[in-house]
Amino acid sequence: MANHPTLKPCKRLLTDTKVKAAKPKPDGKPLNLTDGGGMYLHIKPSGKFWRYNYRVNPRKTYPIDTGLIPIFDRSGKANLGHILETAVLHELGRRGAELGYVRTIAGFEVDFLARYPNGRSELIQVCTNLDAPETAQREIRALQDAANQYPAAQPLLLVLERPTALDVPSGIHVETVLDWLLE
Image (cartoon, rainbow, N blue to C red; front, side, top):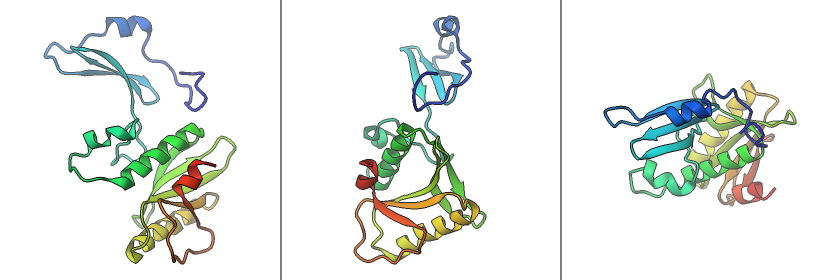
């Protein structure tokens, strides 16, 4: 893992000996052994599995595969916004960004604060549809407020489809997710 181009090296906590000796709990419940950097060994009576925990916002879970979202979201509704956020998260990781999220003093949240290896940083808000004025206002207001706290970061609003008519303040860049992914 230390040589992977997009993952930061971390101190290995689990040795081969510890992994081979690890056994599930006597009551049959799973056991998780942390290896650092979000990687952990999940041990069940049926076997041992390496897992990676993608957590940016502590209130959100991003699965490693967007096809797994229905397992996490039992509502049965299609959640295209969560799928887009997950795809953006994976692309940011592929680009080598250090990730976080922003909760402003006023209580607004921005999906991602991405800091790239070259020193550049972006505030990224992901939204499926900006046609409803209240949605556009909410997403833009969050970016503006976060930009005040992180003036060096470029505010970016990623959308599924470019809105027909949208008045965006200067300094906020709007781009379709498709165009952004193909950069």
